[in-house]
Length: 272
Image (cartoon, rainbow, N blue to C red):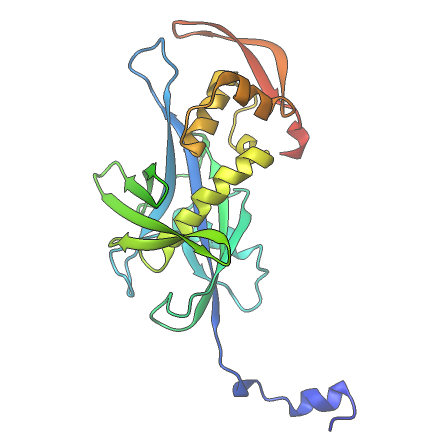
């Protein structure tokens, strides 16, 4: 028996324990507009995710989320900032912890646990030039009671199809990947988890305002909610959701063939 902690530590042998590595993966979503040919309509908004193409094994030439190993002396909150900058050349993006993924066989090299982080931005407002191996993929989601189908398309005509089935584990509904040929590691599951989390978060948090301009119309804001929730919202329902989050300004939006529209701003601007 040891008499004190110093005596215990002197005799402690860490090699008796199996080792694992810790990584972080970054799920960067965007809701952004593409110009509408009909100037009388609001520009259509697209939901997208940022992926990078791997140039090393394992999974060489496969697409993946930006990610990498944490350093032994690195704070867990600092690692995703460093890795996102290294992988994509994007900086100063606010991220929140999403989930920890630790399936035994998620990486063929060794036992690796990944803490995933999530962010929501408007890619058109980013000022950094994107790294050449990174690309935004537009997301299309089709959902029914049993399955979820997600397609990802980028400007270079790369098409990725993901399919999930809904299962109940311990009374909770979860998604299980049943089709994935192009994404590395377990990133198909990370993306689906992020989509579901984001849909929940925009209803009870103000995360959506991290990517909104200082002034916006209610129509523009409603588009963002509808793109993320993947459904149309009736105006009264939408206004109930945002009633305590925005305030009307004395500014109006004019031009482009639209009737003048009142501009609003986030009520808690200093907390963004």
